[in-house]
Length: 106
Image (cartoon, rainbow, N blue to C red):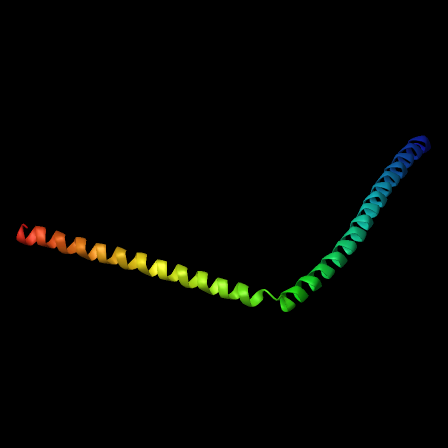
Protein backbone atom coordinates (compact mmCIF):
# COMPACT_ATOMS: atom_id res chain seq x y z
CA UNK A 1 0.00 0.00 0.00
CA UNK A 2 1.36 3.35 -0.97
CA UNK A 3 1.68 6.40 1.23
CA UNK A 4 -1.13 8.23 -0.67
CA UNK A 5 -3.53 5.34 -0.19
CA UNK A 6 -2.65 5.10 3.48
CA UNK A 7 -3.21 8.86 3.94
CA UNK A 8 -6.57 8.62 2.11
CA UNK A 9 -7.73 5.77 4.35
CA UNK A 10 -6.47 7.63 7.41
CA UNK A 11 -8.42 10.77 6.41
CA UNK A 12 -11.59 8.71 5.88
CA UNK A 13 -11.22 7.06 9.28
CA UNK A 14 -10.60 10.40 10.97
CA UNK A 15 -13.69 11.82 9.27
CA UNK A 16 -15.73 8.82 10.37
CA UNK A 17 -14.45 9.16 13.93
CA UNK A 18 -15.39 12.86 13.96
CA UNK A 19 -18.85 12.01 12.65
CA UNK A 20 -19.38 9.38 15.35
CA UNK A 21 -18.11 11.75 18.04
CA UNK A 22 -20.45 14.49 16.80
CA UNK A 23 -23.34 12.03 16.99
CA UNK A 24 -22.37 11.08 20.55
CA UNK A 25 -22.22 14.75 21.54
CA UNK A 26 -25.67 15.27 20.01
CA UNK A 27 -27.07 12.30 21.93
CA UNK A 28 -25.36 13.51 25.11
CA UNK A 29 -26.95 16.96 24.72
CA UNK A 30 -30.38 15.41 24.22
CA UNK A 31 -29.94 13.19 27.27
CA UNK A 32 -28.92 16.22 29.30
CA UNK A 33 -32.10 18.04 28.26
CA UNK A 34 -34.20 14.98 29.08
CA UNK A 35 -32.53 14.70 32.50
CA UNK A 36 -33.20 18.37 33.22
CA UNK A 37 -36.85 18.08 32.23
CA UNK A 38 -37.26 14.86 34.22
CA UNK A 39 -35.78 16.49 37.30
CA UNK A 40 -38.21 19.41 37.00
CA UNK A 41 -41.15 17.05 36.47
CA UNK A 42 -40.17 14.88 39.42
CA UNK A 43 -39.98 17.95 41.63
CA UNK A 44 -43.46 19.06 40.58
CA UNK A 45 -44.87 15.56 41.04
CA UNK A 46 -43.35 15.33 44.51
CA UNK A 47 -44.96 18.63 45.48
CA UNK A 48 -48.33 17.48 44.12
CA UNK A 49 -48.07 14.15 45.94
CA UNK A 50 -47.38 15.96 49.21
CA UNK A 51 -50.39 18.23 48.65
CA UNK A 52 -52.57 15.23 47.76
CA UNK A 53 -51.47 13.33 50.86
CA UNK A 54 -52.14 16.37 53.05
CA UNK A 55 -55.57 16.74 51.49
CA UNK A 56 -56.40 13.07 52.01
CA UNK A 57 -55.40 13.27 55.67
CA UNK A 58 -57.14 16.59 56.37
CA UNK A 59 -60.16 16.22 54.07
CA UNK A 60 -63.35 17.21 55.93
CA UNK A 61 -65.48 15.20 53.51
CA UNK A 62 -63.73 11.85 54.13
CA UNK A 63 -66.18 10.58 56.79
CA UNK A 64 -69.17 11.46 54.61
CA UNK A 65 -67.59 9.76 51.61
CA UNK A 66 -66.86 6.66 53.69
CA UNK A 67 -70.51 6.48 54.83
CA UNK A 68 -71.69 6.74 51.21
CA UNK A 69 -69.25 4.02 50.14
CA UNK A 70 -70.42 1.72 52.94
CA UNK A 71 -74.07 2.30 52.00
CA UNK A 72 -73.34 1.59 48.36
CA UNK A 73 -71.46 -1.58 49.24
CA UNK A 74 -74.28 -2.79 51.47
CA UNK A 75 -76.87 -1.99 48.77
CA UNK A 76 -74.88 -3.95 46.21
CA UNK A 77 -74.48 -6.92 48.53
CA UNK A 78 -78.24 -6.96 49.32
CA UNK A 79 -79.12 -6.81 45.62
CA UNK A 80 -76.65 -9.58 44.87
CA UNK A 81 -78.09 -11.73 47.65
CA UNK A 82 -81.65 -11.20 46.41
CA UNK A 83 -80.75 -12.05 42.82
CA UNK A 84 -78.85 -15.15 43.93
CA UNK A 85 -81.74 -16.28 46.14
CA UNK A 86 -84.29 -15.84 43.35
CA UNK A 87 -82.03 -17.72 40.94
CA UNK A 88 -81.49 -20.63 43.33
CA UNK A 89 -85.20 -20.82 44.18
CA UNK A 90 -86.15 -20.81 40.48
CA UNK A 91 -83.59 -23.52 39.75
CA UNK A 92 -84.84 -25.76 42.58
CA UNK A 93 -88.48 -25.22 41.57
CA UNK A 94 -87.62 -26.09 37.96
CA UNK A 95 -85.82 -29.26 39.01
CA UNK A 96 -88.77 -30.32 41.21
CA UNK A 97 -91.25 -29.83 38.33
CA UNK A 98 -89.00 -31.78 35.98
CA UNK A 99 -88.83 -34.71 38.42
CA UNK A 100 -92.62 -34.59 38.94
CA UNK A 101 -93.13 -34.60 35.16
CA UNK A 102 -90.73 -37.50 34.60
CA UNK A 103 -91.74 -39.77 37.49
CA UNK A 104 -95.40 -38.98 38.01
CA UNK A 105 -96.41 -37.69 34.59
CA UNK A 106 -97.99 -34.59 36.10
